Image 1 (spheres, rainbow, N blue to C red):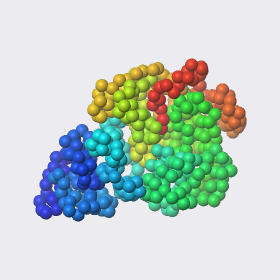
Image 2 (cartoon, rainbow, N blue to C red):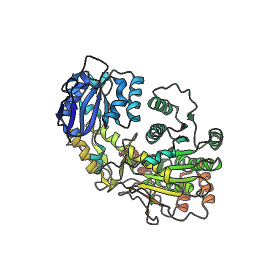
Image 3 (cartoon, rainbow, N blue to C red):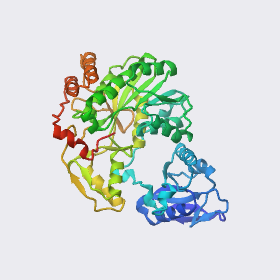
Image 4 (cartoon, one colour):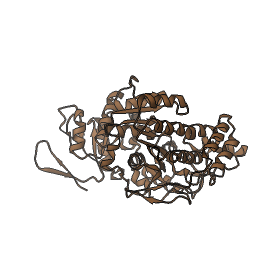
Length: 500
């Protein structure tokens, strides 16, 4: 792909040859110039800078690239120049101004990256490597899938939308995208006030915590959930709140039941009771033929959602693979370990996982909201699973550290060698979207209500053994591993690659 640029002083186009995503650099100072030079000299980064934004009117062209306008022109330049990526290269920019710029770029449809703070940048120079960004397509081994159809936006446009777990990686990205589709109200619920503070800063550029759209609540508190639904009457609910880290739930299964199962039941029953239009649960591929507490609690949550089909609210679930770039995910841990020259710990040489980007994950949720009716579970076509060893080696090569050390520790309780998207009893059904499949799962247990009551009682007693037995009675495919004391102590000594 050739990039054609026009000089401010000439109508004749000037052709540059960098390959990759059309990249706009915000800031034509020393950091921006150094970054542009690095990107032009290193095509493997996949970013092709074609111009700058800068508030200095004296800057018309910097190192062969035009200055296309001031920072205030960001949104119009992104749209007019078909920008793929915006990089903010002003390390000294105050946080509120940075947040406002990032929001403008994201709302315009561009991906956003930024350099670290000045005191960190000055220690090593503002170079392209500071972006800590590796192409998701390179790591996925496939093209990134844009699953959101134009008609899908009408699901949230003009509606009152509630996002639970709003401060998490998936929840916050949902909030950003939903907000750009102009809901009549966006209610952001989280039990962690620090998460809400950070989220409001990212989404609105302010962090005054003075809006009714921020909700501090625990989904395990049924009375509080009912109060919220009775007062705010949300029409579309995206349920992202959950305990999601596999090793911690193996150690604390009762907490997994309280949040992932009982919390989901509280929400979906409140949604139905108060006449919500749509309810979408965010699940995980570990819910298919579960071997872990995480997978079992999420499959139970899917069953609870499906049990409310036909009650006036369109309900459904979505199963994620591992989400690259989500907070606390494999990629963040991998980047930290390689940057610090630490060995990367993997359980088995043959372990593989399905991976998706945050953008794919949120697109899948929005599409599910448009299609969910009868408790279906939706899954994105993520291609073939990626071997963890291959992913580590690819990432290490891309960041210039090909001699990474990998240490294998063996599979731990609850972990699968290979993931599946559908269990044997689940039929894979095509949907209106060519890259999304659905299943309605196995027949609902006749004793679901009784079994859940006994499960909740065991969880309230904090009886982990009883919780595992109750889940195994409800889910024939779930067979909990025997967790010996040495195994329990070893659980957190390994880099766990299982989250969503």
